[in-house]
Amino acid sequence: MIKHVILLMFLIGLSYSQGGGYALDFDGTNDYVTMGDVLDQSSDFTIMAWVYAEDATYSAIASKRERPSNYYGWSLVIENDDGGGGDDGVEFDVQENTAGGGVAARTARVLTTWKHYVGVFDANSSVKLYQDGSLAQSNTSSVPSSLTGNSAHFLIGSLQSGGTWPFNGKIDEISVWNAALSQSQIQGYMHKVLDGDESNLVAYYQMSNGSGTSLTDNSSNSNTGTLTNMVTSGGSSDWVTSYAPIGDLNSSYETDVEAIWKVSGTSASDASDGLTMTVSSALSTGNFAVFGNNNTNGTSTSDLGSVGSTNRTGRIWQVDESGTVAGTITIDISDATGNAGQSGTASNFRLLYRSGTSGDFSSAATGASISGDAVSFTSVSLADGYYALGSESDASLPVELTSFEVLDTRANGITLHWITESEINNLGFILDRRTPTIDWIEIASFVTDTELQGQGSVSHQTIYTYSDNTVTDDETYDYRIADVDYDGNKEYHSLQLMGISPASIPSTYVLHQNYPNPFNPVTTLSYDLPEDALVNITIYDMMGKVVRTLINMEQTVGYRSVQWHGTNNNGSPVSAGIYLYTIQAGDYRQTKKMVLLK
Image (cartoon, rainbow, N blue to C red; front, side):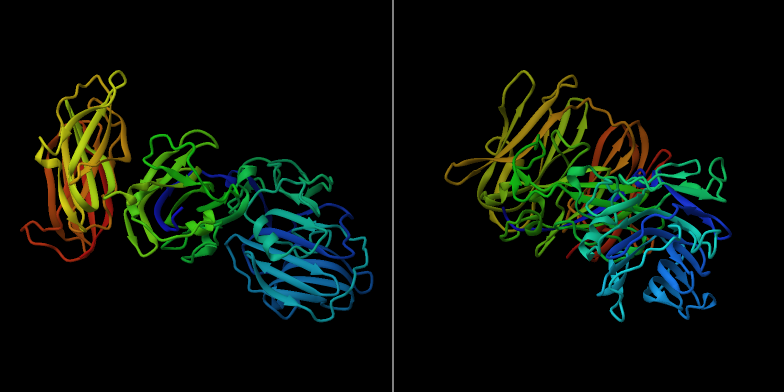
């Protein structure tokens, strides 16, 4: 397997995953949940929670603390000066017979954003507070060797029974562990729904009830909670939809679970064994993507169907998303497969997709450009499902074929389009076709068709087009292509077109991403018309000035395309940069970006 780093630009249109679950909304007045006198922790333990704080008032996220004379126990709280702590922020405090504050770890508080907080007590060693998987502070001063049991209730949303220091905001996914979890364990658990039987898990509140006064312990330990002073049904219920970035992944795809969400900002997410995500502007609450993988190295040739790939990564990523996310995926193939080597041509690679855990993959995108080890797939619309990376071996052939596509269909005609990045001793091409009842036959050749004649030996991109006018509307066709060198050797390429029909009609209007992109000097703009319409396709610069009007005419239903040669309405070449292209067809209007290189 060749080593590649693949940069995938995508638009994700998504339906909500874990966000369809629940959180509890505390009013900051007297709402709280009590589990009773349970979960005394005498030695190492961890408390973990997703928190959406709505004000900076001193308040408790969770606690088990009492004060017969001095303080015993622990608390995870929102701190401020008015609370007497002398510090603003979020604090995890462990107290063993202390008159005031105990051993605490703190971090800055963030309001109206889902944040993940974890307090860790490592007996006789440290008290730690993690925020969003990163260590915020570790306090190693005067850490007790053990904790004395107390009779206080384990509470969510309050510091002491009766609603003292009540929390204002939403809380989801609270878990308690009788071990000091490591940072890697915290990061592995924070974005996924727990099974409930994880090692050292002693309580887990997934907030799965959705109504009623009981809070189920989703571990096997039955530490059930009771909602107090809270509205438990109806339109004003304190059971609310959760938008914490938690994915409900298939159990076989929970390796190295990561996410991109509001807190990520414009920084790249952590990598799930080679795959990271980045967005150009910070996401809003409720928009996120959670992803994990199947923990499989190497490559595979299974389930490829007709995607134009000869192998794929053994590693498959499941993506579970909420809302709308537009961003970038980067895949480091050496990390994903364990294989290393040199990079190839972008268009030799496919982003593969299937909706379930089995069956053939389809091709979601073809590599559009490459710079060093980074290959870009632009404007790919993803759905919740399973993704792998496919590659094809045409890079080893004398002709480097990087695209083989349908350019247009119409009554009794199919127009094909292919691109080479380089050619060595290429005499020309041969085009074969088959139907469900007739095997492969040659329908065109460089000998009889000048448009199939090769370029000899060149290192630049060449675009070829051929129209098959010997088809009928009631038939489907497959196509394959071969090149012939000066010695008469014929090599078939792995890219094939399957099930093409001139009678197929688009179901909706679609403006596709131009191909190739970035490009120099020519790119193709494809679009689908589900009905006859007046079509206008215009190119603009980033200031909104018209650069070129490519089409302004009535067109009939079908799959259409037009090429732009990087010139303005006067026929003069335009400068390199980002351009917008817009289609107006009937009431449908859509705009996309493209990049012209020089």
